[in-house]
Image (cartoon, rainbow, N blue to C red; front, side, top):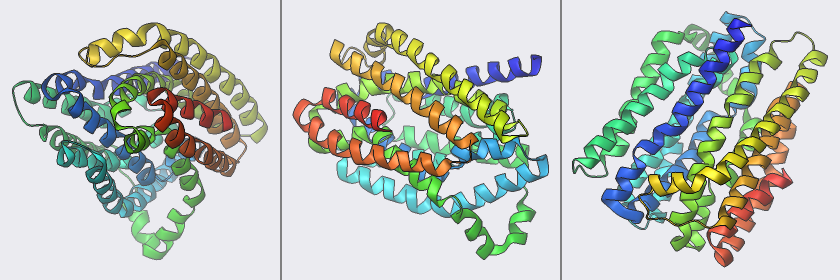
Length: 387
């Protein structure tokens, strides 16, 4: 009981700190570079988040439960295979993310491209492994703390008059520190990767293809709405990105619920016990989403006003749509990430992501062009409903 409480406390702390870390730099950017600077970084973060999903290769979906029901040597082998496989993807994905942002960002394109590339490379993180092994406090040390330091350092330099380029540079330093700490503290079984050899490593990595495809499909309507709106309605990007950033902050905090329950579900020895726990967990995640959506509706206007230095105005309609997305996303996380994965049906999660992409992307472009920020949020809600 005490160990479970400590794990939950660690997940709560890490989720909140990780959610707030990127926001440290936002008020400084809006003050020093205005809505244009914020809009460029918003597009970069959107594209970078999509790239991170590609690099991550679906390990956050089924990896925690695989680790939770295995031995420590098995877990360290999985970690090494995961890191080696993702290392093959990081350079081409980061380069592609940078090129997309260079084409889309109306201003500060080079700086935004740097943010997109480094954000995509953060898909190399090992948080899924730490969730599966029940070590949330290590997540705070190995992944979140370097990001917090990078954001705080960049914010201080920007406030002192440094160019916007210091932000992607700080993120790059944080990534290198995080990867070095993972190597020293978690000790991935690199010897196992050498024994596998290139051919068997590629075969092992290809086993994640279906899950990765589903995650990428989901990312098109989760991570890319800002980018899609930048294509059809650039003027609506600052307001939409502001509401969605606070929405993502709420969802990041809620991520502690399915993360905490992953280990609880995966630790059971029989499939029937895991499925029963997963059902209960899905309900808990949904109820948490309902409560968080209510709080979001009340507090988001204040948060947006503070974070964006009064440069962005939001309407009650935007807040209501955003709250709906929070509830629907919580339902998706519980049903897919917990219940279906516990039944060995990660492919169903991938299929549902394809449905969300087919619904969300055309609606984001169409409704975004017609109704701006409200259309973008309505498209997100429709996509999550279809999923």
